[in-house]
Length: 317
Ligand SMILES: *[C@@H]1O[C@H](CO)[C@@H](O)[C@H](O)[C@H]1NC(C)=O
Ligand SMILES: *[C@@H]1O[C@H](CO)[C@@H](O)[C@H](O)[C@H]1NC(C)=O
Ligand SMILES: [Cu+2]
Image (tube, rainbow, N blue to C red; front, top):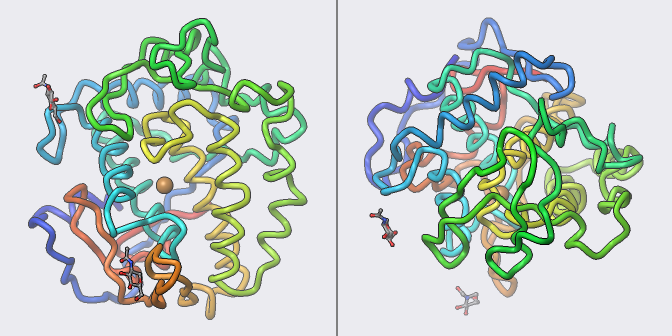
């Protein structure tokens, strides 16, 4: 099921008032797969759809492209009190964000499965991960000689995304080349913080027995490590500038889903932790909290996306 059709009447800032529905709307869940299993033809189709998003108009009234809507929304939420990181709604917020991106790729002709990057498979040497392939992947590290923004923004020099222009930095509208800066250019090349996202690290996260601790360790551990290790545009809150963001966050969603499926009766309703980033008074999050999307899709309650096989979302891993 495609999500966009359900959300035709976005109204400014309004919370979704769609009543909770019985979970019988997902007869045929779409299976999401690891990037390296797609095969070269489907990988090309995926990346062609990414490039296509850069040719479509914004869906939220910006003067930039559909692709740029994603880093814009993601970064603007982090500048406001409506934080979606370091708070309980980190996982459900990104779950829907990734779904909206998938729907956009489909509008651009992508017909293959939604793909994730299972970085545990590459923890031995993350620099050799198939996602960086210069022909079938997203290209590799940025070139230190091309540091256009004078701030660890090193342009890609290979792959189909070479020359990919993104529109936003944390300062606002600042068009620039897509940049990567593995290990911030300092640590030894093969490392890329892999100890934080190898199998042992992920097993430790998966061993947490409640949502609050699971979210905390997943976000601060493997999730944050990949953002830092890739560097460049992947480091600031404009990180959806790098299309690898979405393969990374599909993997994060996968780990949450697999954790939920271990005890579906309790874990598909287990939610909690800080509601806001205010350390002195964070408040306690609830399933009725409304997640903000700045018109990318209508705002929606956390409870609506706790399961991946409903009338709203319909996929499996
Ligand atoms: C697009 O909007 C930004 C402000 O967000 C502005 O700085 C920029 O000049 C605009 N670009 C064009 C081509 O109109
Ligand atoms: C954080 O919470 C404290 C205590 O309720 C409050 O005084 C303060 O204004 C809050 N800070 C922000 C930035 O909202
Ligand atoms: Cu994020």
